[in-house]
Image 1: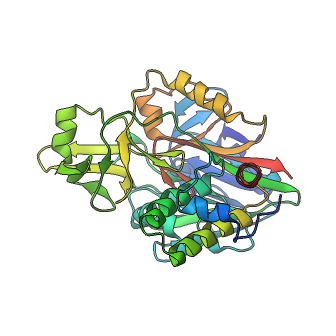
Image 2: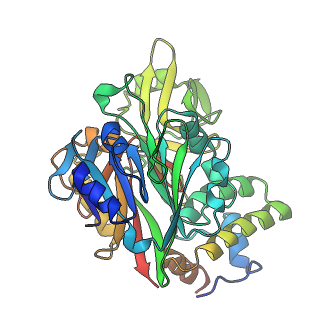
Length: 331
Length: 77
């Protein structure tokens, strides 16, 4: 078992056996687990090995990283010290979970690319969330399994030292591509905006979206030296003129709206073939709630990838509508 | 393959955008997305040197990763 969905009793057994675990599930389930070598975040949506995409409040998704974790250090970071997350010299990689819609979420989203020693070691993880029926009623949480703390205003990080002879690679699967046409730039970094420059000419972004009939289920896509990085729309409010995003737009970055995707499964398969994964090398993966919803992943399989569904994915920085994975290789 | 020294011309060519490579190492692509934009707009010797320092450090700290090794072969042969 490397990644699977289990009952609380089964997870408690793994913890008691001393396994090193990344957990995702409902707050009440995670809060009831024994202390041990684990971190966790709230979310009730998953891609499971047997049933594909599913929502459940009764089980916990488990990623067992014991074989790759010679030693671990679990540490929480507030938005004030998260900038040091890449500076843990003893670690070979770090797993991070951040509660959604918090100051630490915003701080990471805006600042991670400029953190000291950015990318010095792989940093992967996710933004924890809540059941969509509970939006506004419950808040996302993260857990430090070692201390039993439930946290709602800080990130939890597991720094991992690998056994000798192992190395890692972080990858993403993004089914979206830039469409031909207008280049969009923004005057300020942020999770929202009113104004956009369309091919250098400023105008109201809400008006542009309306006039072009942009499908806001499709993200904005920026090209980072060949890596296509999405920024997903949260809302476009005609009354206030404000457009909100699930990740920040950055000034100076050139965005284009994504091309239509006819079918997630076939686009996903095409991307997988490009990547050419070594069998059995993936130890962690997670996918976005927007892919789950917009692409109808409930009951569908995304093999070889399983894992928690998230309110944002982390591969060195915050991503949207993207699958993130971590591979372990022998040197 | 060891990470070639910082004074190799290819490092400066990458951060200034003079040469573009099809890279595999995700962290380098994210970093270069920002570096190339800022340095190509103002390619002073200091900016180029600082950019090369950042990129070189990134590759050195991740030198055992398969994607890094593929990039080094691609860039330096």
